Image (cartoon, rainbow, N blue to C red; front, side, top):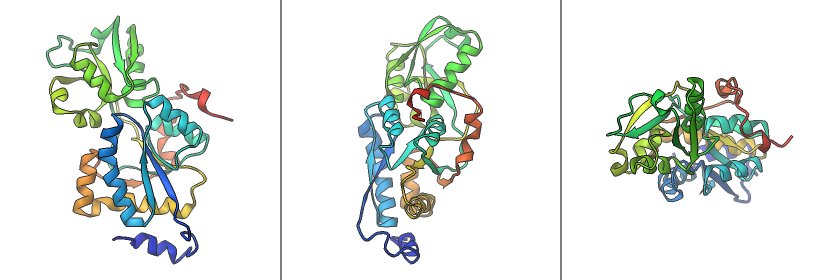
Length: 272
């Protein structure tokens, strides 16, 4: 499969790759940069092998920094949460490329396994841990539910999903927000101390999106390579590492369920 997709597209646009260009592929920093690099760089290497492109891993120190960079159009490609996509599809105009196949994203609230807390109603008047204000499933959805049932709480933003899990495991906070994929990826010594207290309803998952200036031919190369990864045993292992079954093509309208929530937390980052 190596270079197969590239060869097909070169037959249509033979001058496109006269000069090889580096493309950045940023991953939302749900976990530490070192962990994200370990999980995603081999997958990006697979894409490079398929396409002949030079796609390189990027991330940010925390989710707000990642959001700021998206607003400035800094990344060529990015794996972003559903709410991020609805914002940055509007401006600077990131376009849907792919999303996880057969998947809905669900937020969770976790507590220690030995916690006496049995329901989210018991979290009233407590200080709770979340990754960042605009972390969609790990923060927006559970906070909305807590407010909706009349709970009063204080939110502490601890920069990543892993930080939520670590601080709850240490007993620094009684509960915190995350998603099942990152909970499964956190170190077993942390994960084994936690249990899921509550789960949200499902929404269209994270988007892989491209900057509006990316040529259509390059977008299609990346899109085809992502969809093709699961066709090899090596690719299946790479997907297993990031807890995704496979990718499918996506269109901008796939996130209309998220748009219908009318969330406006990042309106200050949308430049008109």
